[in-house]
Image (cartoon, rainbow, N blue to C red):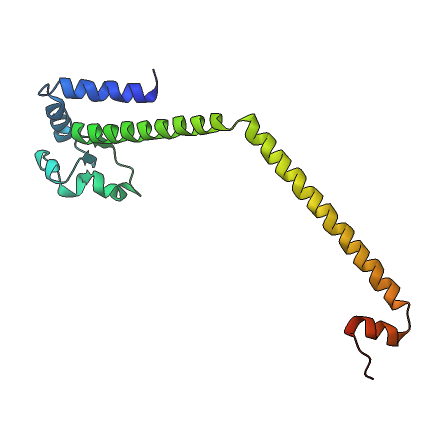
Length: 162
């Protein structure tokens, strides 16, 4: 059973067994717990059902309140179902993205690969021709350097004016 299936099983259990006493069990347990604690609820209004200090209630929107503490944490069933429902939605989205990526990968064919290889080969030939042209120009410059300065200057600038 995948983690997604496990979460879906818990959500289904909570949804089909409403009024079974999930919240009552949490209330009785937290009411009788005599030490500092945190109770995670879907929102602060749902925290009103617990007989505890307002500072012990943490909503899904204020999870940062847990940082730096080492108190035990009780999770209200509504908060749990909300978290699990969001997790299943995100897992489903990610599964769809993975499926799409796999399909895109399979669309790349050998024809595409050969076309890219041919394009690369053509670019290599262009590069080699450019290198040959540069070598020819370099030789021409060397030959001109060996000529008298006046001839070299005329060849480069078209005129000689000392």
